Image 1: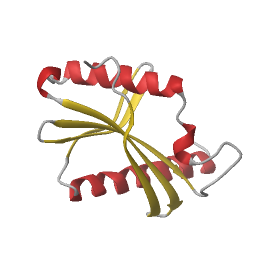
Image 2: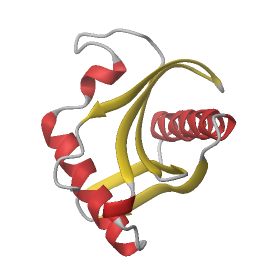
Image 3: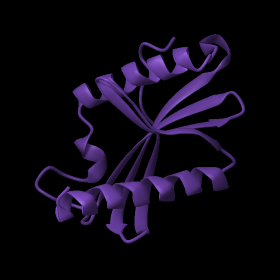
Image 4: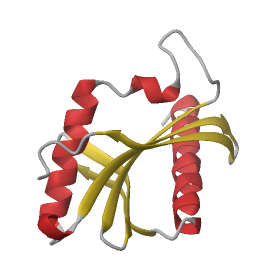
Length: 131
């Protein structure tokens, strides 16, 4: 793995750890991290009571670039992959969808070396296909 690739992965892992810690402070339990199947990945899965969160984490060094902000880089195809993977996760983990509220959040972070500014978007896109 090249140095830039390693740095990107390391920064991503630091960003996910930052978000996981934030969620734990909010009373959530981290159920899974970096769950990967063919065609999709879930950065963080968290629970609190009957609420199940699927959190997409985006982190950059800078706030803006030609394509917008970190949160603006989640396109419809990516959303479809996240929802499909979340449905698979729920099915394989015995989640009873009739008794569970599902929410998709996005954590957009800017910074590095464990120091981040975070925009946390609750209910960032609909849970279509999970009900």
